[in-house]
Length: 561
Image (cartoon, rainbow, N blue to C red; front, top):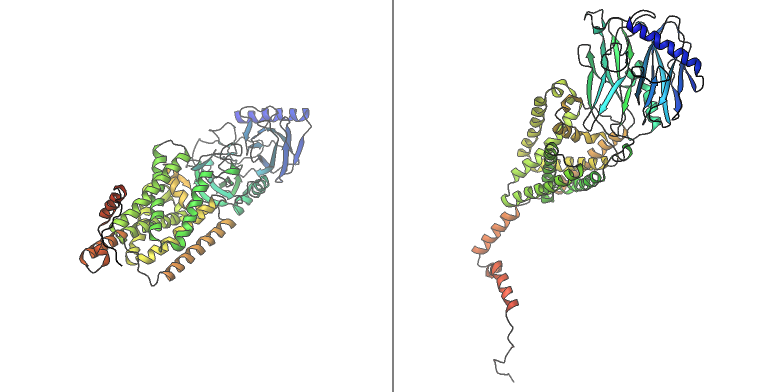
């Protein structure tokens, strides 16, 4: 009963304020979007008229791109009577005979804001989004709350209640858990990707308008999961900085076969106002330089890696060492990103040199092929778990299952290299080299293919990342980059197989060749090089010549006539 008194008091204050303020009125029709401009010091009235009698309650929602706005039941925003966000929404139960209502919109930070808004009507049989709220400020809260960091984006919402007629009291939320209570409700979590590399306000407004209601989201969005009323109303996703994403929740009543949508919320997982790493300039210069050089090296390896075996080994050793050291230094220190990248680069160079020197000294082809095969196995395992297979509950809820599967795939690949070492090495050059070019392009133009490796990196760095859904958008740029990757890889593999068909499988070890040459000189007296003194003796003799005083040449033989 107290909730009903609350709504009566709120409605009375709203009616009085509408009579006192008539300027800046915007009249909404049910289900029709309108764009509104709000200056820093003005209040805009959102008025809904001609509401049909079968409508029991309505949600009002507004969406902005960069700035927060305040949506309030009264002209003076108060705690519990207003919502401030970039996607604020309010729910209004209607009284018997009521055909109109008014809400108020303000700029939260005093700046001019452009927003798009809509009023959605619902009948008495539809569930009430946020009707059993006990966590957030509003009495009935239809909003989806979002927070993000570099690794994950988390959404949270209040439980819904069963619908009810105008003028009646809402059903009790927690007196029982029977099939005639709100515990029968189910929640569908949806995700909708905005166009890639498009940070415009128009793109956001168009996307929000497509998925604001139940029909639009079910038709255009992607169903991620369904929660029961017994489960936590919190869902995690992988953050995709610079990519616009809209999240929404649709609550369904399976008994009455009705549904209602919460207020959608959007994010770019970055800030439009930050002076560093803004959404418009997301890529760091150091990252772009690093991956540009890596892309050029990958292009070289893709077409010439097997021919220049030492260069290939250096690149593979560099990648392996730099990646895992970056994980180690990130998890154990608080160093700045640029410092971590620089230190990882140095360690990568050391790792690449060590791999080359190990081959130079030992000449073991199989040991080097195993290292190269592990690199290809890493990429294959990352690709397999990048697919929808990686979002299965068995992988999301158990790190042990995920890493055992990942390592198993990673180890299986080098086994095939034991039988076909040259073909496996050339295939690795083509696939790894082509993907390095994709990562280089990602430094300048976003592509979802970069998350093949980034999702694994995030899982290494964040202990809670296993709970996040790792869906990414696949749009035109992604299909273009897949084509580029396939063409580069296939061309590199075919070219190298053709060029190396009549050559030895692998180049010989320089150190072993030197040992053989030295032994040959010792035993073959007919070899002219056998009569030359060793290199240290020649250097010592040369030094003595430089330090000894030259004697004048004298006449030692008689002149010949």
